Length: 457
Image (tube, rainbow, N blue to C red; front, side, top):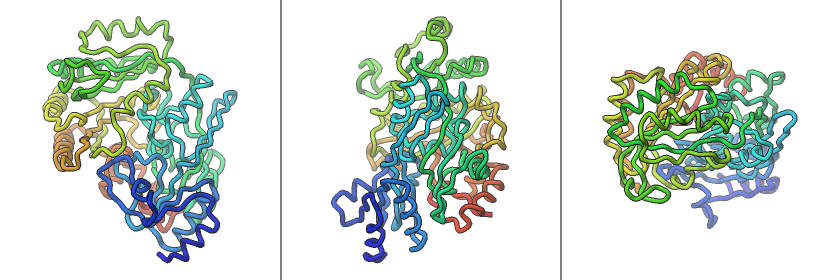
C-alpha cells in the first residue's frame, strides 16, 4: 500500500487513521478475544458517515481486504484482519429516542450499555444481548439474543430500518418500503451486505426487572436442568432465565465457601408486574434450596452489565454453538458429563431459551432460520493464559461433538468461530439461497467478506 495513497485518504478524512508505525497501533488492533492476533495495514476511526464512505471507496479502489468493527466482541474476531483495513465505527454514537413513536435510532458504533442507558430514561428498551460492552451492530446483524427474547423477540425482530454504506460507497436506507430485500438480509445475515451506520429499532416497555443469579450444588445439575426445561416450556413470556454450568470464580461478590466449586445456575430476568415477583418466584425458590440467591429487583440496565467485569477484554475465548429443540435424559447426561470436565475457572456452558415471541416469527420472515429451536447452546472455553489455548479448544470441541446427535443443525452465527462455508450454509439452512441472491445484488464482488461469509449467487 503506497504512502501517498494513504495520504490521499487522510486529506478527506475527518477521523483518525492509524498505521503500524503509530505508537497506539498495538492497542488499536486488539479486539475483545485475546486469541485473535491480526495486524491490519491501517485502522480508520471514522468520525461520520462521510468517513465511512471514503474508507469503503478507498479499500475498494485499492483492492484492500476490509474488516468492520463496532464493539470488537465478535467471537471469531471479524472486527480485524491481516494486511488490510479496519473501519472502526466507535465514534458513531448518536442515539435518538422517540418515546411517542416508541423507537430509537442508534449509531452503528454504539455499545449495548449506551443504548440501554438512553432508552431506560423513558422506561423502554431494545431487546439486546447480555454484555454491556458488546457492539450493537455486530449483535443485531447476527440475530440478537437477550433477556427479553421470550417477551419481545430477537433484536432483529425489532429492527425497522438501517442506513447502509454499500460496497459501491453509496448510502442507502433499508426499510419495509425501500430496499426491503436488504433489510430482510440484514436481519441475521451479518456484515455481508454493507456497513450499517445507523439502526432504527422498536422500543418495548421495561424498567425495573426482578432478576439475577441463582446457583445450586453440582450434584443437582441434572435435576435442575429437567425442571428448568419444563418451566421454560410453560412459563409466561415475561419470565426469562438462561441455564449454565460453571465454576464459581474466586472473587467478590461470591462467598468464599463457593470459590472454585462446580455448580449449575440460572440467570433470571422477570419483566412483569414487580408486585407479583415474590409470587412468581415462590415455586422457583421452593423447588430446590439454592446455594446462592442474588435475585431481586433492579434496573434493567444493571442486569445488562452484571457480568461485564468478569470477562474483561483480552481473555482467550473459543466458542462452539448449536440449536436444540428439546432437552431429554440422554442429552442432559452428556451436558453434565462434559461439563464436569470444565478445564478452567472461566470456561462454561450456557443454554438460552428462544421460544415465546421469538418462536412466533416465521423462518423466512428474517434470515434467522431456526425458529423451531427452543434453545441456543453455547460452549465457551475461556482463560487469560495463551498457553491454555489448546486445552480450552479441545474441551469445547469435544463437548460440541458429543451433543451433535441432539442438534437441529447449524448454530447462532454470533456464537461461533470462523468455521468455513459449509458451516455458514448450515447456519442459514433454506434461507442461504435467498441470502446469496441478495448478496449478489448488493455486493456481487464479495467485497464484504471478513464475516460469516455468504457467497454471491
